[in-house]
Amino acid sequence: MNTLSDTWSWLTSAAHWSGENGIWNRLGQHLWLTALCLLLSCLIALPVALVLGHLGKGGTLAVNISNVGRAVPTFAVLVLLLLTPIGKYGEWPTIIALILFAVPPLLTNAYVGMREVDRDVVRAARGMGMTGRQLLFRVELPLALPLILTGVRIAAVQLVATATLAALAGGGGLGRIITAGFNLASTPQVVAGAVLVAAFALVVEGVFELVQRFAPQWAKGGFG
Amino acid sequence: MTAPPDDCLARNEWICGAYLSSRSQILWDAVVQHLQLTAVSVAIGLVIAVPLAVAARRWRWAAAPVLGVTTILYTIPSLAMFSLLLPVYGLSASIVIAGLVLYSLTLLVRNILAGLRAVPEDTRQAARGMGYGPVRLLLAVELPLAVPAAMAGLRIATVSAVSLVTVGAIVGYGGLGNLIYAGMNTYFKAQVLTASVLCVVIAVAADLLLLGIQRLLTPWTRAVAS
Image 1: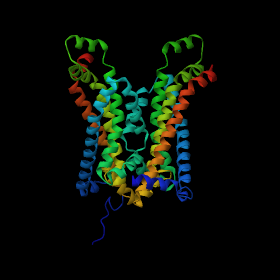
Image 2: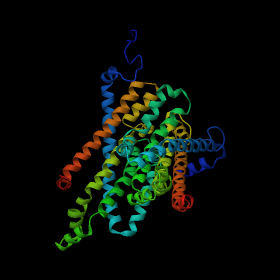
Image 3: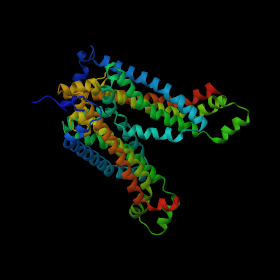
Image 4: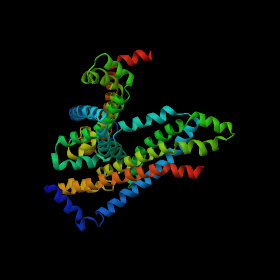
């Protein structure tokens, strides 16, 4: 009970929200890192997955890359990148590590989504004389959209988690509140940071849940 | 003290045989801690997940809350999860184990439930017709048939746990993660790389081991395949 009230008073103290180590700044860093890396990972992974899925090639790679991503500890990659020459360039080790762990779920889900498009529909579209490009953008992509969005959601949640871990390797973001709390041996600060991170992750998950729920309407409207 | 030798340790190289031979005891201790943390957490997770999945299967109303809560738990980043448990367990190995149990629960419950739901209704009715009671039906028919799906979940949970143990370094119980954390602070490349590679080796070995166990447990799936 005591920890709860201490955590609450830590969270509600105005001093902890402002300044370079303040919550607002850390939240901004976290949001920026997550959004930037999500955009970059989508730009890298989705075209590859769409083309591979369209051609029906590279399936084993696209599916197994997720399993590989799971076996490699995020923390190890963060530290390894930090110790390489890239480590000198500020946030770059963090950004690269984040992208490395966001690409697999994007790739796998988008590829599976493309391959699960009903083959009859694809054949019908071909029979109507659609070119490969038309087939990809007008038929396969809209039908694969739900799974692609699932991949984006998993990647976003993964990015929030990885960005938190980046604090252990000296990066910014909300994780810094937790690591600073450990260094100060301040349990209220550790718990407060954890609450903020958990809430942030759940909000991101929730936002994507909503986007996904309303996606089919605008997908139909946009491509019809 | 004499002048330091000009070996790979002094030059701080990534790959270093001298590191392996001189720190084999430290590495071994870290590997043992890593294995213990993983095995204990996944085992506890399994013991909790089976009844939860059976309950969610048996009572329709239980499925939504069980799946909902475990999914929410899975969304919480590992560093935050361990930190949230700090007031409960203090700086101890229990923090890491409790956190990993919560993560493995999601994967295990979801997969076991999927396995139980995939048992064909015909099979169930046949067993009932042969006079099987509900308990015997569960133990002798439903659970064995759910083994392949459950093992798939167990493999993912184990591989994830091996990787997540490293984050336990924040409280000093991270197995090989401790070496990575210490190596980061001292810029010790050989230690970070060796510990990271060992993590991946453990994950792959655990995955293969569980795959082997799965084959032994489900001889009937091989009979169909061949």
